[in-house]
Length: 421
Image 1 (tube, rainbow, N blue to C red):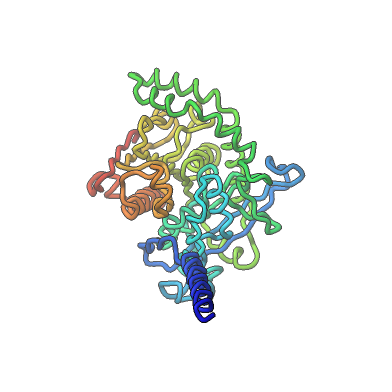
Image 2 (cartoon, rainbow, N blue to C red; image 1 turned 60 degrees about the vertical axis):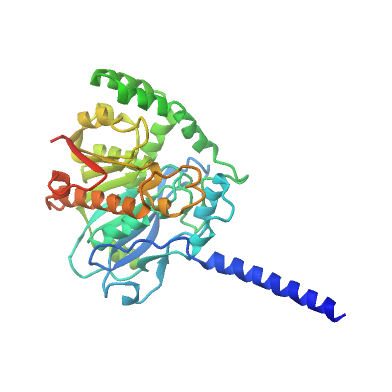
């Protein structure tokens, strides 16, 4: 009898230890966001605007909602403890953003630790008193991407004095919050990718082989012919660029006036506006700069190729394209940007793949096991991305000459070419 009780108690203890281990694992941060490098402490706030003039493509009967999460220099001492208010979680709209992506990737509970990751920003903190106005960068995520996965870059820009608007496109981001508080993802009610999204992605089947042909073509005339032929097949992708460009215009035209978002938006200086984005977000940002004269400079993190009509239009603003080392891709869009941009910089980064320009390279397995990252160290990738973005906008919008872009202070693993002066 005593032996039976001992066995029972042993099993209970082992069960409790197992449950405790699972709780600890769930509470252990997946990684730690690298500290911002600027002098300003950071605040963050969010709002949603509804464009009543547009129907929602992915939800018949609804109007188009656009979520904005803003990051900015805040009042108070450096560090989250220097201001009253809660430190913002990394997964700003909750874990559904990561879980939706994880379901598609079939990663199980590998990303549960993201729930415990914290940013360096205080929610709804008062903006810094000086300067009187903040220059602005509007940032857009990649197609089906995770908006929170650019926090390291965005926080760093805010710490250097920028207001950064992380623009989230509902249904085409892994997670977005609508005006009524509903969280929507890239998955439908059955847990599968939304059909409108698959329509876009299915257009890209020949992209790798076509970009390889373009980069290997002997003349610009051949490159242009191949590019035009491919762009002519991208009906749905062009619609994304148009939809996201309209989102950006509407968000900037309808900044909040009330509450914490209104107090912060009152500090925005849209006469000093830059557009940046990763993948499709970079492509859409470039198109915005073609159409909207408020844009003073644009930067694309590895969004290849440039969908939309830019090949036949001019962009009266400086442009910088960052290429990863994806085979057959480097330089593919040069034939477009050399024609369109008033000034064109190209930056090539060794040992990188597409998602190395986001925080996801800190997430480790299982994406690393699947070869999703390049050979570059995650901290090094973050440093390079932050430096390139900060130096470009500093030079082209704040008129602070960049020794990095001029080549007088080069970075290892990075090649800078000013293709068009």
